[in-house]
Length: 276
Image 1 (cartoon, rainbow, N blue to C red):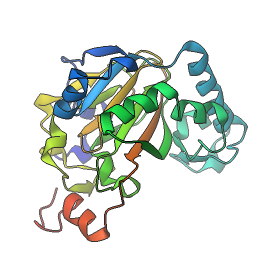
Image 2 (cartoon, helix red, strand yellow):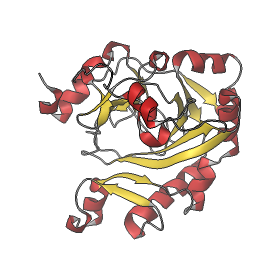
Image 3 (cartoon, rainbow, N blue to C red):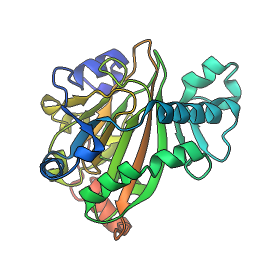
């Protein structure tokens, strides 16, 4: 049965698992020694405590200001035409992503360049990290959409010749019922996978080893660090709760962008002609 015809409930049930959850490190200071080796083996590390309450609230206030009081230089991706949105509730339900805000909103800039985060990334990369993408991913109650399984480096802005690292930061609780992150451990070792335009730019559903899925619930202020080739996704938010998260991507200072030819070789079906 084609997953294009499935309901949000069916997709969440059939393409994700909820019986295995990741163990979390207590803080970013724990990202050292054996934990760095674990990151290289598994492709991710979850951290329970990164942002404090004041930093979380500052991030939420900044996002609310962008969504409800004017973008102030940031950009907003809506799921329907903005002119059709008649109330704050309709507006919140229609916002999928906020992005390119770091240069315009000091509280969000401070999180993206947080000393403890940059230090952990430097230890993982072995060189200085450079911020190459900023976004906020919003899943409103009873309507937050799925982000199908994918690799971040398959998106053009993140296609570098060295691994990028994503930092996915929960501003609300990211739980099993409201769209926390799911990962396929060790999938980064398989290299680039073909992506297809199905529900999004994604790995073909039938190519995802769902039996290996590990969910990564996070408390507010927690962070998931993950390799840019790690296969990951988030199911629909069918709960009554908001799920707002920041996501930043960092490239090693010495990294350069892939050529279009190399990108096509790694992330499309150009060589095989296979279809999804």
